[in-house]
Length: 103
Image 1 (cartoon, rainbow, N blue to C red):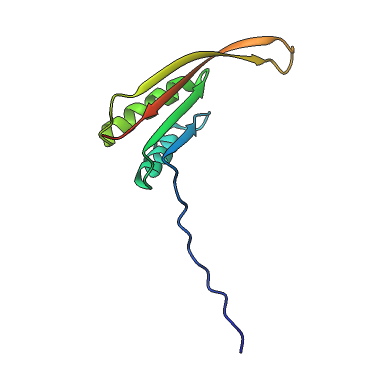
Image 2 (cartoon, rainbow, N blue to C red):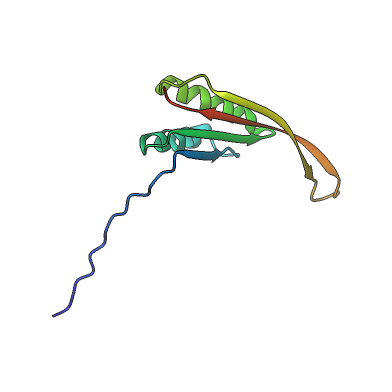
Protein backbone atom coordinates (compact mmCIF):
# COMPACT_ATOMS: atom_id res chain seq x y z
CA UNK A 1 0.00 0.00 0.00
CA UNK A 2 1.49 3.32 -1.06
CA UNK A 3 1.32 6.35 1.12
CA UNK A 4 0.03 9.45 -0.56
CA UNK A 5 1.99 12.63 -0.24
CA UNK A 6 -0.24 15.18 1.39
CA UNK A 7 0.89 18.76 1.00
CA UNK A 8 0.52 20.89 4.06
CA UNK A 9 -0.04 24.57 3.72
CA UNK A 10 2.31 26.30 6.06
CA UNK A 11 1.56 29.71 7.45
CA UNK A 12 4.69 31.79 7.55
CA UNK A 13 5.15 33.30 10.98
CA UNK A 14 5.60 37.02 10.74
CA UNK A 15 7.97 38.56 13.25
CA UNK A 16 6.94 41.51 15.39
CA UNK A 17 8.97 43.90 13.25
CA UNK A 18 9.27 43.68 9.47
CA UNK A 19 11.10 45.78 6.86
CA UNK A 20 9.99 46.76 3.35
CA UNK A 21 12.78 48.06 1.13
CA UNK A 22 11.44 50.52 -1.41
CA UNK A 23 12.90 50.39 -4.92
CA UNK A 24 11.83 51.26 -8.44
CA UNK A 25 8.55 49.30 -8.62
CA UNK A 26 5.18 51.08 -8.49
CA UNK A 27 4.07 52.28 -5.05
CA UNK A 28 1.01 49.97 -5.05
CA UNK A 29 3.34 46.94 -4.87
CA UNK A 30 4.92 48.21 -1.65
CA UNK A 31 1.56 49.34 -0.28
CA UNK A 32 0.13 45.84 -0.74
CA UNK A 33 3.24 44.25 0.80
CA UNK A 34 2.98 46.51 3.85
CA UNK A 35 -0.77 45.93 4.25
CA UNK A 36 -0.21 42.17 3.96
CA UNK A 37 2.42 42.24 6.71
CA UNK A 38 0.03 44.07 9.03
CA UNK A 39 -2.76 41.61 8.13
CA UNK A 40 -0.45 38.72 9.02
CA UNK A 41 0.15 40.16 12.48
CA UNK A 42 3.26 42.32 12.25
CA UNK A 43 3.39 44.80 15.15
CA UNK A 44 5.44 47.32 13.14
CA UNK A 45 6.82 47.77 9.64
CA UNK A 46 9.75 49.94 8.60
CA UNK A 47 9.83 51.41 5.10
CA UNK A 48 13.43 51.96 3.93
CA UNK A 49 14.34 53.97 0.84
CA UNK A 50 17.28 55.80 -0.73
CA UNK A 51 17.55 58.56 -3.32
CA UNK A 52 14.68 58.82 -5.79
CA UNK A 53 12.77 56.07 -3.97
CA UNK A 54 12.15 58.36 -0.97
CA UNK A 55 9.13 59.84 -2.80
CA UNK A 56 7.66 56.35 -3.24
CA UNK A 57 8.22 55.55 0.45
CA UNK A 58 6.31 58.68 1.49
CA UNK A 59 3.48 57.79 -0.93
CA UNK A 60 3.28 54.29 0.55
CA UNK A 61 3.15 55.72 4.08
CA UNK A 62 0.33 58.08 3.09
CA UNK A 63 -1.60 55.24 1.43
CA UNK A 64 -1.26 52.96 4.45
CA UNK A 65 -2.26 55.81 6.76
CA UNK A 66 -5.55 56.17 4.82
CA UNK A 67 -6.36 52.48 5.17
CA UNK A 68 -5.04 51.61 8.64
CA UNK A 69 -5.20 53.67 11.81
CA UNK A 70 -1.53 54.35 12.61
CA UNK A 71 0.40 55.97 15.42
CA UNK A 72 2.43 58.99 14.38
CA UNK A 73 5.23 57.50 12.24
CA UNK A 74 8.83 57.77 13.43
CA UNK A 75 10.84 59.17 10.52
CA UNK A 76 14.64 59.01 10.36
CA UNK A 77 16.50 60.96 7.70
CA UNK A 78 20.14 60.22 7.02
CA UNK A 79 22.90 60.40 4.45
CA UNK A 80 24.71 57.23 3.42
CA UNK A 81 28.11 57.06 1.77
CA UNK A 82 28.20 54.70 -1.21
CA UNK A 83 30.85 53.97 -3.80
CA UNK A 84 30.03 54.76 -7.43
CA UNK A 85 30.65 51.54 -9.36
CA UNK A 86 31.95 53.40 -12.44
CA UNK A 87 34.21 56.07 -10.97
CA UNK A 88 34.96 54.32 -7.65
CA UNK A 89 34.39 57.63 -5.85
CA UNK A 90 32.40 58.06 -2.65
CA UNK A 91 28.90 59.42 -3.24
CA UNK A 92 26.45 60.75 -0.66
CA UNK A 93 22.91 59.43 -0.97
CA UNK A 94 19.92 60.57 1.10
CA UNK A 95 17.99 57.82 2.88
CA UNK A 96 14.81 57.58 4.93
CA UNK A 97 13.40 55.06 7.42
CA UNK A 98 9.69 55.33 8.24
CA UNK A 99 8.49 53.24 11.21
CA UNK A 100 4.78 52.39 10.98
CA UNK A 101 2.83 51.04 13.96
CA UNK A 102 -0.94 50.49 14.14
CA UNK A 103 -2.86 52.05 17.03
